[in-house]
Length: 454
Image 1 (cartoon, rainbow, N blue to C red):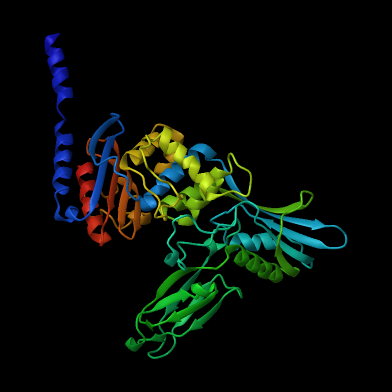
Image 2 (spheres, rainbow, N blue to C red):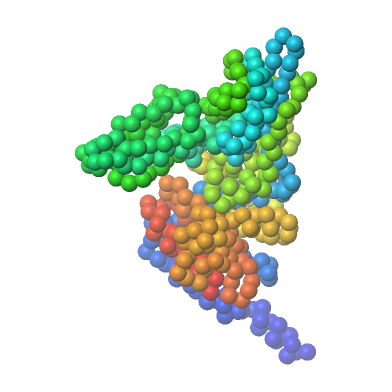
């Protein structure tokens, strides 16, 4: 009996060799000269043994960048359910004197041109429509999140938020060189008269400087300017000023192509007695997939507004959705004093959370098999997919990590799940703030992943 007690005490008084080796490895990595100027928080948790393996500055509040999308996605699937859909509807109202169409949106972030073509084809050809209305009553009129950086405009990763958005409220501009000294070739998709393009660039002429593709955003104009020296194929995603206007204009063009004559376009709510003639349903799991796998900011913000819809009446605000996240981080994720959540994507400079809150979010998801399957299978796989495609290709962590990356100026973060050599699944969080060169920090983070997987 005494021998059994001694063995039990020995086993639980000292870390097993593998855990001790991991701890020593991470301790050594934290002495890297890089960390003399870069902040770091690291946590590792064994989910099989329900044991904390490592913690360095676990409660320090830092900017999470896109790792925040883990919290948003976990809470959205948990609260809304994996069968939830985001719907866009087209209604018709014919009172004998006039015929009007109403398109009602709820911020489907994945609504594309194909969806719009099908919507337009649902209206009988030859139909004459007096007014095409956009029903944007789902959300308030604030088109950006609190703490978003003004000069991230006009890039597609920061779109103008609206209940009606097509192609993420942006266009893709592709530029490729022509003969030396000539204007390069370009395409813009989707095609529309809503925007215009001025091509001032040249092919193979260094005197024209760096190639840029920008919109005249300071003038709130949808004039796209291509400037500089084009030496190879280049593409840029440019947001459109006023996403709902872009949606409405493009839909009117698709209706025209379908043989439907539209008189005017405007904004207004669909009447209760209008007849629904078309419905586009977007599964929430598809939105989560894009938010986690491709780090799509719009998808994360759409989830926030649908969380807001659980307990509030339209028009909904981003802050109402963020309040759901704050409640989760306080209750289920062990909230610490002073943390801040201002959006769902991590774009905001006001987002501040801790490694412990992220670890507890990952643990929360793991404890519910249905929730875990949705989240785990939509996180990028190291060396294979999404934003982890080019990470850990030459080490033991290759194909053993499912994780969300996060990068904004001064911030590089990583969190998710890693398979250790003993077959256990670990949750991990690595948060780095105060950096100048993200590539150096990514290499350091990958070494931490190697330590966990070994």
